[in-house]
Image (tube, rainbow, N blue to C red):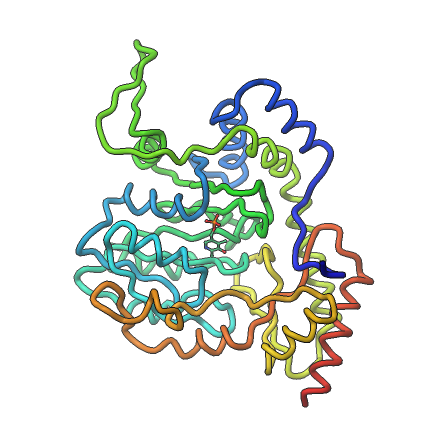
Length: 371
Ligand SMILES: *Cc1c(COP(=O)(O)O)cnc(C)c1O
């Protein structure tokens, strides 16, 4: 047990009550609560449709299938991300093409996308890492010029926006995670958003055994392939109570981030993740860059403060070594540097200023000791 944990899911008695009510209602699979959660999600994003699934990972895989991406196709992904971003490309039989990230925003580097485009490139999966939004106009320019599809891995990005437009609105398809480390957390779950009714209908049917309901019949017809990636009303009940609080939750994270920044400002050589210019960060994680990250991580954890690495640099992992199934057009130097230096600091809704100061004091002591 840590004195100060990395994260704590937001939990209220309303959520527990709601889960109990759902359990007593007998609706244990997808039903009215999932539908209401989808409705509140699409209203919040301002997009046409939201579709609940079992995780962000299954959602990304479904998105690739809905867009017809498969064998022979290439999909560009950033190197600095959760492995799921690239694993899903393998799952549909396509080839991930891994490119570098911007060292300041830690998001995919737009020039590296252009350099990696080949006649086989079908799509890009940008990641709004830790809740830092992608620069949509910049990406959209590339999308139009090269006729690419965009599936956003918005796992961390509920509440972030670019020029006032919420993450999840613009891309062909975006996918959010409802994992306990994310701002809206139900256990395991994901949410797909899109403005396309055609894609929405396909994905809704695919995640429910390929079933299609006719108006005049209560029995579905099965006209294509499908699987089961339905969310349960039981866990959706948690999300329903959280999404009603989403502005409060995201504002609180922004306050905590501002407070960390004030406490750490001027302490060399700490660097902050730079917010995408024109965007609003949602701080699923608050990450800094430091020298000697591994030593600092180890000693802070020993002192009872649960810090963590930011995320992974895919090219370091065996699964993503260059091969005919996985392309690495250039060594992602920036990503490696970001990977080695990034440290995620504890952040949760009810974190106090006193706890933040404890984190900062422990960190500063180690930085001074190191230099
Ligand atoms: C958490 C995360 C995922 C995985 O989400 P699941 O809901 O656990 O499948 C994928 N991509 C990124 C960037 C993440 O942070």
